Image (cartoon, rainbow, N blue to C red):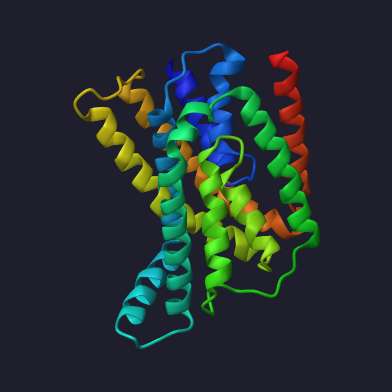
Length: 269
């Protein structure tokens, strides 16, 4: 991998992590379209660290409210507001973790196949479009405990372990079907990524550096450049995505996903 490709990986990650078009799918497709050596899952995860840091900076007040809510809930002082948001967030995260542990081996074996990525882009793009067209705006998970909706969103996030599904896309889809507005669904989705990304990196780092672990097929300097670029581009993308969300809707991303899927099917054949 060259420095130029490290920058390209970072730009792609910074853009596609927050747009519901699958960042992991795009990163996995780069070697397929450009005949590069695949840097592997660990490199892709490190690109996600850049965007996770972008979320941490952009939504630091929300993260502060989450920790405050967990504290208030633990001492039984509140069951609404920040406390309710923290419980909903925790339930969704735990659901994701449990189901990821159950299916992670399947995802590692089949997930990076271009045909599978194309199918995921198409199918979950259609669901994204339908959720935005028929979803309503009457639920706010930051104000009231809602176990059923939290579990549903957490379960849906698990599916994003398969490239092409899109973590933000599937969580926004389930949130919109559950009655969250576009902006509330997006904010909840972005925050929900943080525990999963950092836990995935820690798990993969342990297996990579441990005895008999995977070899690293990229330059560490290039990785740091990619992470830095994904961080900067990620902050810009979050800012403008949230601003444009109510004006543009989600249909344009469903169209893009369909076109990319068609391109993948064409090149496979």
